[in-house]
Image 1 (tube, rainbow, N blue to C red):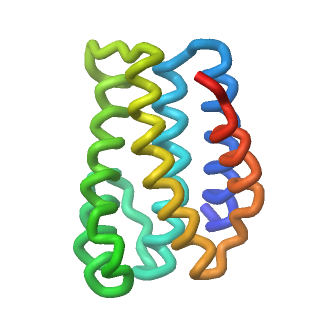
Image 2 (cartoon, rainbow, N blue to C red):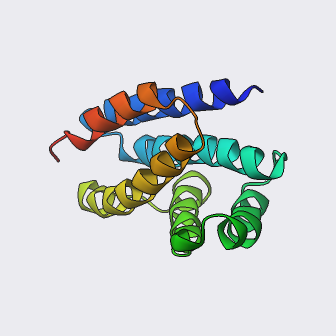
Length: 144
């Protein structure tokens, strides 16, 4: 898949998360939020390593082990937060966990911190994430 398609997917996933949050579909929203991050993470990892990892765990691991340590040293906190969000998404999709509105508020707090960093990195390496930012700003304006 072309990198611009991953960027487009990220924007679409954010839009889906907005719709899900407004409709009280919190489980779907958590998944969509994660997949918006994962799409951009794949772009960044490809840019630095030339590889697109199939496994999300491998993607996060390589991002932290190779890319953060070599190129983005001031983001050492990011891999642990990515893992945290990924586990929250796995809980929603594959476990018997049900998140409510208050849980999602806490998840959004983490998501915003991670996505701010991912967008900053994406822009610094020249990806056009303007469509993602537009939807992201709409997401930030949702009152829960």
